[in-house]
Image (tube, rainbow, N blue to C red; front, side):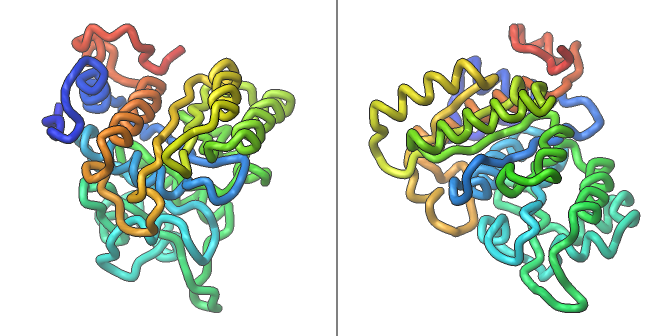
Length: 290
């Protein structure tokens, strides 16, 4: 178990999170971050959540820009130390499974999170990958890293739904507006009717506030969402999340760090862990095997 940074305080919840993060089973759980709408802060959440989990998980973990766009995404959320992108991972192919090749392509966040950024060029020699190419890259990376987070596009295409169907923990991000929360509820309903009930039943819904105050109507919509999803956490407005700059979760506000801890705990609670190690926490939480 790693030392808990002072910025995240103490208490049973954070200690249990750190213990379970240190007890993850081999096999690389897949945390897929998507949404019903665009512009909700998926990349910011992926970077912040991945940065926090990188503090707790003893072995390296990776966040992958899976948006398949030549702009935005995770590249603005981590300081670049090289020009390597997901396209270089496509070229490396099976060589990624060796570990050293994968590490060479990664950008590294301030907490040790490995980040495979998206490709920003549209040339004959370089381009964003296709879905089959990306799925191949993810498969190789899962043999190297302890846990993987995918920054996916909005959940309005078959490949995104397929990725969510494969995920260990689906995370759906929403803006803190009535319409956005309702769109997330409709997405969960559509998934159940399409045979993806396991995705809807295990989904962690994250509501990102875009102003310091939240309307009463939004809170009412969140209450309905809590009855439909496995968990719902609201992230308060934080200017650092709104800026397209590299993210260090330790530098976020206290309220944001607290919300991020709840999201990380909801994710880790749904990942398979070693039962003997997890029992040392005396936590009643599930070990992800139900």
